[in-house]
Amino acid sequence: MKQFISKSVAFLIITFGVVIFSSLILSFSSNITLLKEQTTIIAGDSNTECALDDEKIKSALNISRSGESYFYTYHKLKYLLEKKENFNTVYLSFSPYNVVSEENRLTSNGRIYNNFIEYLPVLDLESIFYLVKMDKRNAFLSLLKSPIHLIRHKNVLWGGYLYLIRNNLDRSTRNSKQYYSQNFTQKNIDQIEVLYLLKISTLLDSHDIELILLNTPKWTEFYKFSNHRDLFDEVYEKHFSEIKFLDFSSLFSEKEFFGDSVHLNFKGSEVFTEYFNLEVISNTEDIH
Image (tube, rainbow, N blue to C red; front, side, top):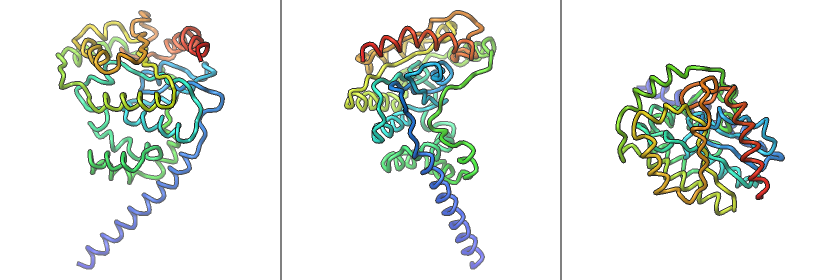
């Protein structure tokens, strides 16, 4: 019995120490100023992460991160506003996979384990308890992630542009055909993502910040396999039709521009960034 108690106490001490050390690392990572002269934010998942090189767009900062749920994007933007960061426009990744999928983008496949500790600096207590309630085990395990991991991946939650060196288009198209050949139904609409995209819209509107939804270039075959795009269009018309939507999904037909069926590689990104800077950003700045 004494041995069991000793082991239990030792485990609790180690756990407490890891959590405290991790919290200290996270507190340092949150005390940063992201925006300098930029007044535009590019946010979302790997679509915008790979598509837009913010180093070539003077007025923009790309905070996109692969696989990011709108839940986390909402809290990142809320955090920036609470820190009085000054921006007037947000371009947000918006494509079929964001709101229509077989899986939940926030919680499925251990996503809370992968993300909980890294996004902790921008979460309030209500959101922390919400995630714990959704997946207690993985939230706890995420807290116990090695502090070394947090040191090595400092500020990872803020994402950024990803220079993608890849050209797996043919294989990716075959895989997409297999995955998207199913018939998606209303049950495949991710209600959490819809809810938090609406919350993002409300948040930004309350601060007079323009939200623009952005579908980056896709390989045209991507949309031919099922009703995936049709259901996506229904979701947009029902929930987000009042939000400006820039759909560049069919902009490119050059195979060499794509890392796979939904992501631009560095070649495609270079061309799209230039186009976006001249045709979209410049016009938006003229308005503001």
